[in-house]
Length: 406
Ligand SMILES: [Mn+2]
Image (cartoon, rainbow, N blue to C red):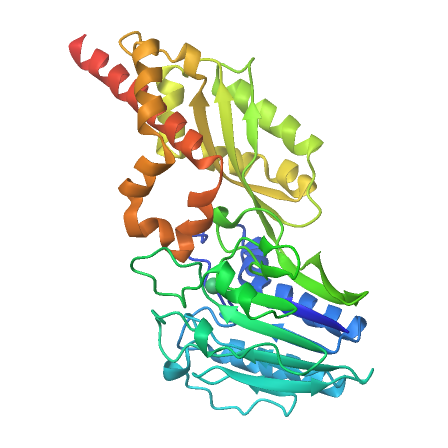
C-alpha cells in the first residue's frame, strides 16, 4: 500500500503585506499555494499511489475562492483519470456550513460529513483499508471527537483522519484529542492536520501532522510538503517530501566585525553569495552585532529607509542568491549592550525568572494557541529571541533617556 498524507494546503492564501516585493516575485508568492499543491498531486500520480488523504484546510478562507475551487476540480479530475481516490476532511478554514461550492467534485473524491464515518477501499493489491474521519460543520469543534471513531475494522489497514489539536484542558476549539485516546483505537496511521509545522506525535504506529504544503509567513519558515506513506513489513512508513514553491527563512548572522551600516551591507551581500537558495526564498535576517550602531545608523535602520535603499541597490545580489531580503533586525550581544545603567548581573537574574515557558504561557494566554502563533510559540528558540529583543529594547530606551538628559 502506498498513499499520500497532506494537509493545510490553504489555497489562494492572500499573502497580505508583501506589495513591496518586485512584481515577478510577488506573482510567484501569490501562486505558491497552488504550485505547492500541484507538486503534491504530481507526486501522487508519479508514484501511482492507492489514494490521497487531505486532512483539512484545503482552502484558506471559508468563503472558498473561485480560483481555488476551479483549481481543485482540475487537480481532482487529473487524479480521477489516474484512478486515484481522494479523501477529504474539511477543517476550521473550510468548514462545511460556509461552503458555497457550486461544482460537484469528480467521482473519485469523498468528502467526510460532520459526523465521523468510515470509507473502505479495496486496493489493486487486494488489500483492504478503512479510513475514518469527519469534517468541521462550523468554525470550531470544541468537543473531543475521538469517542465517535470506531475501533480498528476487520480490514487489513485502518487509518484515522483528524484535523485538530492536542487538548489543553481549556478553550479548546479544534477537535481536542489526546495521543493516548487515538492510540487506543489501534489504527495503523493517524493522518493529522491543523498544525502547520510538520510534527511526529508517535513514531509507530505513525501519528503525525503533515504540516502545510506552503509556508505563508516568516513564522512558517523552513521547508514544507507532505508525506508519502508506504507499507513495509506490515507497518506504515511515512517519508516527507518537499512541495513548497517558495520558502521563508530566518537566518541568524553573527557579525563580530560590523559596526556600521556600510559594513553590514557588505556582509549581507557576502552572506547571500555564500548561501544561494534552491527556490525563491523570502529571507528575514537577524544580525547579531558586537555593539549598538551609532545613532544615525540606528535611526536609518529603525525607519526602514536603509533596508529600502539596500533592497533597491542589491537586486542583482538577491537575484543571484535566489533570495529576497524582507527584513534585517539587529540585535546586540548581551555582554556588550551599550547601556551602562543596565546592570548585567541584575539583568541575568531578572531574565532567568522572567523568560520562562510558564511566564510566557501566562502572558500569551490563548494567543499562544492561535494557529498563526502556535508554531512560533513552541519553538525552542522563542524564549531566548524574546529575551534578546527585550534587552535590545531596554538598552534602546535607556539610550533615549540619555539623549533627553543631555
Ligand atoms: Mn491550517
